[in-house]
Image (cartoon, rainbow, N blue to C red; front, side):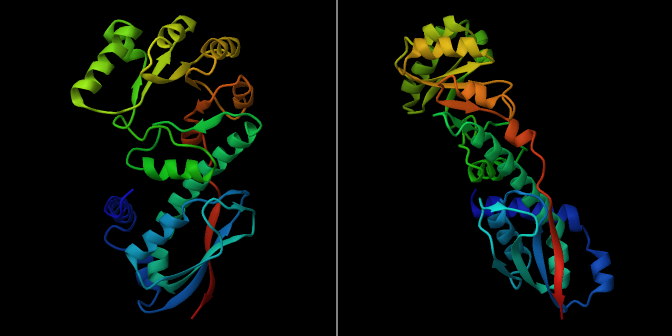
Length: 283
């Protein structure tokens, strides 16, 4: 995410929270009073969003200093301190909730991702995220997936051709859809990778006939059919599976021999990691 795009997210997040002003802090605290706070960890997990927090703080008040004790992607346990802040008390309290909202959610995604990755670490399968993300926050959530040990699938509709069931139905069949994509790429002089979704073993066999396709997605296949597909493909193309995959069943799917497992579980079934910003000393 470029700096200007991130600043827009930060700007509107702060406007939403602060509005016309933090009247509580304005009433209680002297505008020039400074103090120390620390970001404490209250649950075991993977910390994520430190880089975002630094940019948020710098955007709102560049005079606040931050002393980092952890790095994005680190394992943290209750009692750990992620960083210390020193600066104007009013400024620190103004950014507190936005900072915690983003970091708790990003850390929750990273933690959930790590749990899933650990389940399949004995296999060759790599865990991919999906486009099932919060609108406008996709890059931050996908960054959290990476910090948890997962990999990013496509970022949007623009960086990969993914022929799915609806495309196939509208086109009148698998081959018809692929043929149209091949012609489109030639006409537009584009070099974009092509992945095709299969709904059954017959689809898999049909897709195998196209050299232009680099990956087959097996959508909502049962374990036995996945194993059959892996045997049929026999390494000729990458195989990705998706559909209903979660922390409880991912190990069984990974052990079928597939190359990739895509799941939206990390970005919509995570639990935020409990973090707390507390005063450590005031002047």
